[in-house]
Amino acid sequence: MKRKFKIPHTFVIVYAIILLAAIATWVVPGGHYEREVVEKDGMTREILVRESFQFQDNQPQFFAVFEAPLKGIIRMADIIGFIFLVGGAFYVFQRTGAIAGAISKIVQLMQGHEKWIIVIVMTLFSFFGAFFGMCEEAMPFVLIFIPLALALGYDSITGLCLSFLAAGVGFATAFFNPFTVQIAQKFSEIPPVSGWEYRVVIWVFTTLLTIIWVIRYAEKIKKTPEKSITYELDQKKRQRMELENAEVGEFNKRHAGVLLVLLLGIAFLFFGVIQLHWYIVELAALFLAMGIVGGIIGGLGVNEVAEGFIEGVKDIAGAALIVGFAAGIIVILEDGKIMDTILYAMSRLTGETLPLLSAYMMYGVQMLLNFFIPSGTTKAALTMPLFAPLADLSGITRQTAVLAYQFGDGFTNMIIPTSGVTVGTLAMAKVPFEKWFKWLLPLEIGYILLSLLLLIPPVWWHWTGF
Image (cartoon, rainbow, N blue to C red; front, side):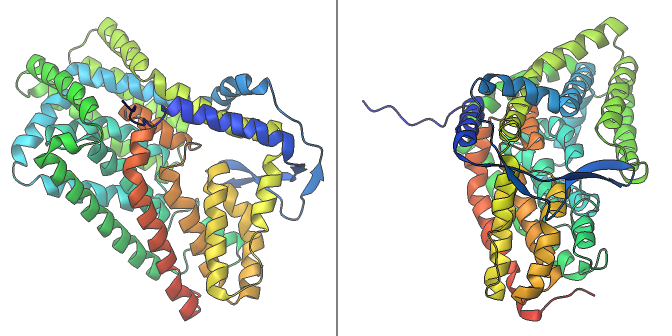
């Protein structure tokens, strides 16, 4: 009897890539870009200086394949700490019974109108991604929306789509995002936020298509739960939720108080990100404070709050490890001195060619680069000073080059194993990367085809956006 092929575990996939990266350090020549530090909205970033690349000796990596995961954990310490604190805080919230009680109420109120939850929530998160570049900030919401999706008769994949996929789509089709669109426009020497009209059309169209896709999938799963790729995992989650619901009882004033803390915390999150330029450290502190205050208001003693927090951290430990392992891939490439060589080669793939083909090649290079540099700001600094004048030579506008960068940077973020946000979110959601990859791949292919189509009008119109 033949054994059925099984997609490898997330750790196996990531470690295999670490090994491939180490092998590459033996055959790819070394290279180096100079770096400089820039400041934007109170945040500093290190970017590559264009035209500064020089070849140098590579440094083949061997024993480093065992060191890379720990080095990756050290590199991603802020993201890992954020995951721990958020996981601990939400477990405290769950112990109070407020989340389970609220979900039970929502299910009762929305009976027969469940689809509108998908429409409203996904539209909101897509807007957040498009407007201020919601990315890491979307991670904790899967801990709310996955239980909600399960209670509504859907699955964990649907819960991931409500916040993570929606924010990712908004990020990819952003019309304002200061960390991608505006940075790329600055390096391309075109007015900030210019071309927003066509970008808004793209955002509305892509968000609508994504919501329709998710609703059709969710309704199919509701009719036949066994078709879900996470069916066995969700059964265990539902059993756990039933036990929690039995312990919680009716929704009461204490539950309402805990939810008020949660809602105020989320409001502070958006205010802090938009107005105060908060990032991981401040957001982690906010969730820690929410967990402590929410636990006390929810009737837990200080020891119960502490125990609940520790349990939450244990529950989410896999997320921390996978984020560190994923970062280890980049560590290997950098320590082997071949990361910059790869970036240099990719940035030179495009040349003076037919206008539409040039736009497509820019898009393809950005997608390839995204595997190695998930940071949109860094990619903009590396590629746009090159692609902007190249656009002039190729007969397309610089605005079109920015759009090609935007598509190449955004859509694949949701599926690459080198993105700390992606693997961290999936670990929080307790959805294996391989299952998410299998589910998202058809939609990802659709996004790629859609990107190619949406690049045609700007080339034809010679779109400047100003």
